Image: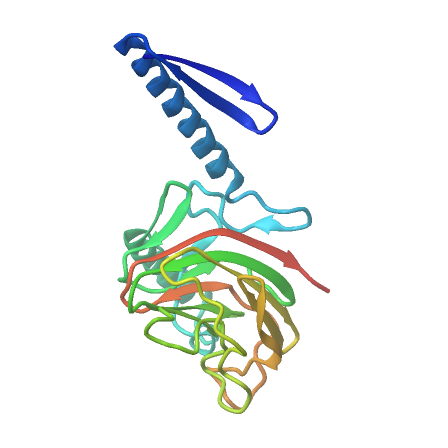
Length: 245
């Protein structure tokens, strides 16, 4: 079989006619090269922030991230030396359970939260996530739980709600999950108010996020962004933040 490749306006075309087995091998090589090229282009596009945003994950390692040390009220009571020692232990545990594979942050379901080294106040955040069946996870805002992530087949209300709210709405407006696939959050936080889009659908609209750790106080003005999980393999990529006034 004889095979040739030509390019049109929409891309390459493959043409077949009878010849030898060598031709088959050649087209196989061309196809493999094309797949490799497209795969490389897709990977290169990941973890590249849009204009005005900063990538919190560089696609290579966990630079800019740290392990979780206790709760915000408990950390506030630590001396500098106590905090440094606790952080060293938390980072060791973090590195044992969070890793990077092919441009994706992977959590093995053990250990504790992955936290940004930097604290944030008002911000807009994009993050892609994927979770396995029966998984349960979340994203902490300013160190407080949480924007809910879970398997929407097991929880029909879907992901995106402010799960730990008691006085204010805790469930999403609608179910917008792509079960078993990559999902995208866009999260905006200004003061105590939060807006969340899941796969471009508004699921939380101007809702007060409560302080889980100290219910009688408003949420802290600044804090870490944290990736959390309850005993299930979890995947994150394309994590971008833009600080707001």
